[in-house]
Image 1 (cartoon, one colour):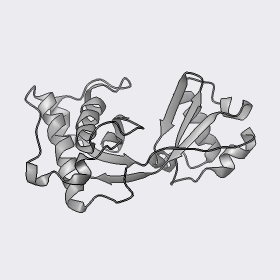
Image 2 (spheres, rainbow, N blue to C red; image 1 turned 180 degrees about the horizontal axis):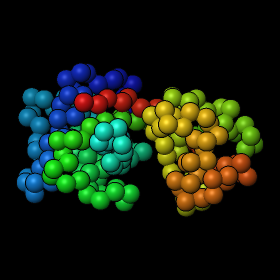
Image 3 (cartoon, helix red, strand yellow; image 1 turned 60 degrees about the vertical axis):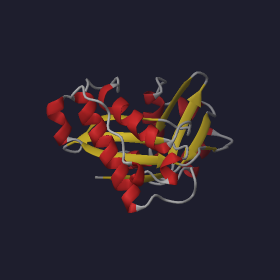
Image 4 (cartoon, rainbow, N blue to C red; image 1 turned 45 degrees about the vertical axis):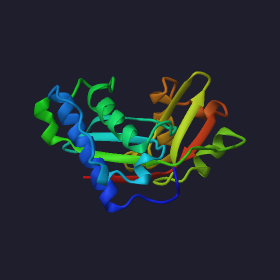
Length: 190
């Protein structure tokens, strides 16, 4: 991702695309295409996003990618569908739920390794409300977007929940040095 943030119009176009994509998929209709005049160079560049869906403040789906491997516009569309219909934690979004959805898009910077020497050092070097965190231990991995700090403001709780998300014991981060990466996001919502 380039360091340049998206314009207000680019954000509106991507949010429109996410909502209309979910509506079309729920209606079994062809997916929407943004008019050529709305597709900017930034939208054509590789981008990595997470699409988060909530209803009444409650999570309804959240899926994305950590690596930019396709144009931003395609990544938004693909992850809007995945968040609505393929998040294993929830059943597929129904057509009746589509108008109730609140859509948030998080555009990620490339992740960077966060080296540290001992488990007790890790919570002290994280930046709450700034860092998105990826934990890896062998074949297991999980991430929390920076927005998750709002629900888990204590770094130790944050890390414990992230270990559980990756299918490990909550205290794994206290027992060994894990492979940790951080990233930041440009977040926007309807």
